[in-house]
Image 1 (cartoon, rainbow, N blue to C red):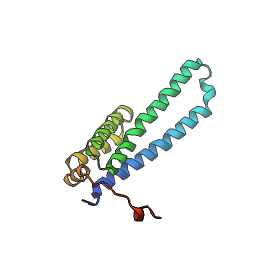
Image 2: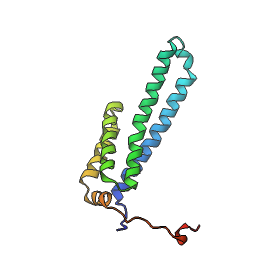
Image 3: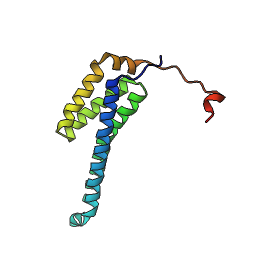
Length: 138
């Protein structure tokens, strides 16, 4: 029951990881630029500024969380949550990105749905791990 992860799943995990890192870094630079030029927003009321920066933070979370959760559920061998969060990442990619990431997400979702070894790997359940004194030693 201890099979290796298919290569295609490793590729999908790597692509999602690179995407998450790229989006995280670019969003960090965007937020830093917004705070550095915060004097440009001083003409607006405080409530509008708070709403604007909150909406930016909410978008960052909506863009970063589904790919990260997809990576986690691929690692945990959970098929339904993997497909759910990959679909959510595709949907949010269509809403927020409108670029090449949409094609990448469609490719990854189709691979998860149609690639038989990946589907079998994600649907299998591993035996519960039992811990004893030898497993706990460093």
